[in-house]
Amino acid sequence: MPLYLGIDAGTQSLKCIVIDTENGGIAAESSVNYGRDLPHYGAPNGFIPSADPLVKQADPILWAEALELAFLRLKGTGVPLNKVAGISGSGQQHGSVYLNSEFPMLAHEKTLAEQLRPLLARPVSPIWMDRSTATECRELDEHFGTRMQSETGSPAIERFTGPQIRKFAKENPEAYRKTFRIHLVSSFLCSILCGSHAPIDFGDGAGMNLLNLKTLVWDPEIVDFTAPGLLEKLPPVRSSNTIAGRLAPFFGKFGFTPGIPVAVWSGDNPNSLVGIGASNPGILGISLGTSDTLFAPMRTFKTDPKGYGHVFGSPSGGFMSLICFTNGSLAREKIRERTGVDRSFFDRDALLQTVPGNHGKLILPYFEPESTPLVLNPCVKRNYSDASPAEEIRAILESQALSLRLHSEWMGEEVSRIRLTGGASKSSGFRRILADVFQARIETISVTDSAGLGAAMRAVHAVSGIPFETLSGMFSAPEESIAPDPACAQIYGKLLKDFEALENSFGTGSADR
Ligand code: XUL
Image (cartoon, protein in one colour):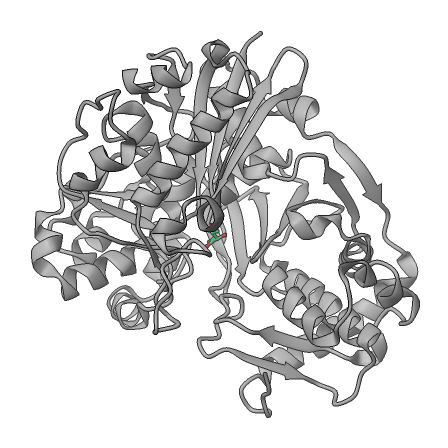
């Protein structure tokens, strides 16, 4: 019975999923919620509350302690962890961890937290929600112009790692100088498992504004301008099916066999692409979580003329797109609370009491600073003054679906099938609206943690060579599917133009919260 472990280190929790390649099933799972299970880090939502809404930082030791607790819980399920033949993982993207030396040999009787704390060259990690680097992004854009996007796949972006490193080097040059290695969340956790500094993969590395996607090496000029001496502080960058190292002896205490291969980790979005079974062109993936993300494999390297969409290395080779909409479930929940309805209202009343197109009622729901389109000052705008609760719910769902369609058009991919994942993919009302807005078949898979599943599938692929197509047939087969209603094609074709006009006028109209 060959088992493989995928670890998903997300924004608010860390989860483990063990898959069995013999029967195509899930052998065990465990999870740790940072706020609930590790309250002593004072990070109820995965970051330390800050007076500045643009600053979002976490203590990186939180992720190490969560890993240890998740392994203990996994051991508690009774699954034979000594049968695990390979491990890989997924990290929330862009976050950076600053370390001052090589990894120590871990002592069995001590915790990961107490042994790793002395390794920190910076006590906090800026995470992907941080938007405090507008100045550094401007400096990078002024210096490199369009080359930044055409070579790294993205213009300088506030949450990306390069601008974050530049800010740290400017504000705290001494601590920066003493930093020996800068990791992503993914490569930091992979290094802990291997007991030595692990590489970064092309998927997560592309979210740094440092990797040249044409040459697949760190871009020497961009790295050099970002911060002094940065090249020596970066781990090597490798393809996503590289074996990063061997499991350190410390992890034998949870029941694993020390020495098993650990495949290089990647970001949650590249992992999800694999996990939902969309690693080959033709399927689009949408993950509906706190933030919504849209991703798809790309036949050719091309970039978003508006600069909101990003290009990353795809774990199956070639490239993938990634577009992040920060106000996903976050906005759906705010509107739901405001209208005072329960979640089932999204699936029943909101559809029955309204019509597709909602008589043109649209909403721009930027409760938090938004990435797509870029909005730094939170603001919510409606093109109507009066709406029933059902119309208000339809307005948020249709507007979000239209935004997903509008901002993915630059990829130029024919979309006939969309695989949905994440908590809100359970909403049949939202699935119906997405099918009609995109005029595409919507498919859902049974596993909700597509990033963890994708990481486990990458571990199988890297260790045993089983192709992704075979693995997605085993683990990501569609469970439910809805066809689009062709009668809606014209309605949403027109509404898309209205939505674009509303978005373009953003900032000129009056705003309310
Ligand atoms: C992608 C992004 C988010 C995080 C969430 O660019 O910032 O999707 O990866 O974990």
